[in-house]
Amino acid sequence: MQKTFQKINYESLTPKQQENYNFHWISAILAEYGFVSFRLSNDWLGADFIAHHNDGETFIKVQLKGRFTLAQKYINKNIYIAFPNNGEWYLFPHDKMFVEYSEMSNFTNTRAWTEQKQAHSKGTINKALMPLLAPYKIFPFLDSITL
Image (cartoon, rainbow, N blue to C red; front, side, top):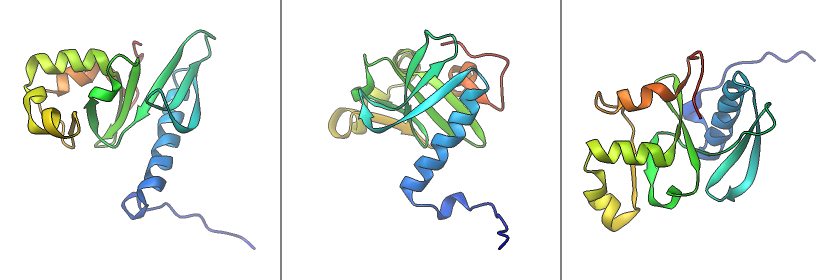
């Protein structure tokens, strides 16, 4: 029996299915840069997966998000945040972005940061944040990324 394959509607997926979908997308993108990704069954030191470069020396711990996110729980854990935005993917070092973004924004003074989750996320990337994120766009592909 022959099966016809049809593309899925991302919005119709459950949150767990969306996370799996996103993991495979980012893994394929990272493969273009020489990485092999290993999914972790439970967050390990804040990471959803480990990406190992074919240089044999570079390992990065990655937290997969559905949107731009900074959080207290990722500080000083050497975590990278990967997220999609309007068909583009970004991978940034959390601590470096935390410092740079906090210099231009007062997000650490918001109620969400001080009283609730000690986290900050943005579903829409504004013009002020885009220059900080631009060096970390990995899809559509840039020539190189700096880790």
